[in-house]
Image 1 (cartoon, helix red, strand yellow):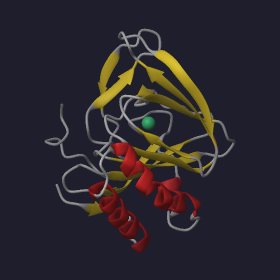
Image 2 (image 1 turned 60 degrees about the vertical axis):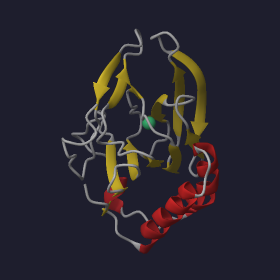
Image 3 (image 1 turned 120 degrees about the vertical axis):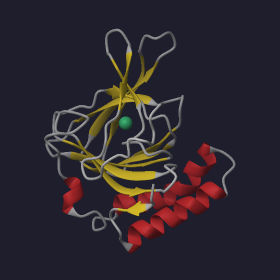
Image 4 (image 1 turned 45 degrees about the vertical axis):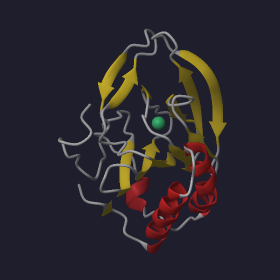
Length: 201
Ligand SMILES: [Fe+2]
């Protein structure tokens, strides 16, 4: 797999270079996230770096509900991806996991997020939080890997994800809200195909 800057701009290249340096110098995922946070906050505050193409919903998407997952950057070894997740007003994701740590932040709109634990196959709601534009958090499995997000604003919400896998192409899980049963799930990206040889679990 080739490293790909789908959105090939100085801002994205500079951001990814900074992320790589931060990860290389960090002793843990938590420390890496902390080191990346200032750059990530800058990205969320910059109104100009993300073209309109990556801010629109996708009627036929892997997540359902018109939710668009747009790849912006992916490393050659599948250890890093940057993408936008576009959730129309009133839509929500299935309950899902990511199987990787990283940072997630809101670029447009507002969301409600529910975080789940799954101690004995059953899902337990552990936290519900509201996110406004510019808010972000570190996502560290297994602490908070399972969640569901819903757009609460009248406008479509857009969140920016920096995760340490090829999130759209790895096989991960969605969960049945009532039984907690896990089902294999691959969301894909709206704009870039997955290589079927990679990420299959
Ligand atoms: Fe998620």
